[in-house]
Length: 338
Image (cartoon, rainbow, N blue to C red; front, side, top):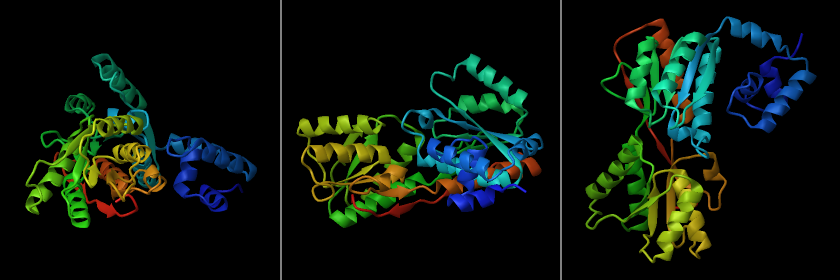
């Protein structure tokens, strides 16, 4: 009898989820890991035919990923962990997950009509939509399919779709309190030029907490940066070269903004955190790898994926017209940058 996926994971000292993704040719693992798993599976006699046999009996769920998460450099820990969490639940229930990545050029009427045809042809049982920038009009177009839909990272009260969202406002408040308490000065704010609803909630929570704590007697120093690491670095360098006053500490709307700002500060003679402290939001993979390691607000992304998968399975078993918005909490990860 050939080796099982669980046994293979143990031999390779990898997670069962990573091995499953590699064997089923799904995103979420590196090319190197995928090759390692497939080579070992062949060596130890893994029965690849069982994947095909299982797939013929599986219900299929389609994960549609929004524009912002599809942009180059943005498919990071958040997307990977969301996908891993979904897979952990769906695989236990013999369900298959397919992934469709959107981009801003694709949301034309023709593209949406083609997507609807493909979804019907694939006989999906349900849809999971991931992205804070998922347009309401796009979701409304998908409703004609009469499939259960679960949203991740966005919610519309007037649409018949349940959702799993992040408490972004609370995360902004945590950051404001942490920086103001630690440095005893009013912290600044690094704002992303690319706007999604969740970013507005983060800045609102940040500003409200400062006002409640009596810090905001003056206008908070806000700098707007591009959404990529290199773009944020270039924008921060321009701010430094213009001689604009810098705060003792900053909260960045995303980790990528924070990392770009840190690079710009370091290359222009500033020490982080000794001269300027920086913290981010999301806890992407790179946050724990840069120097100094990034203090950030952690999003429980794997857990969000698990909740979304559980919700879609619940709707398949118990259809309902009632919707819910499950809001997950965030937490502070204190490292070296602030």
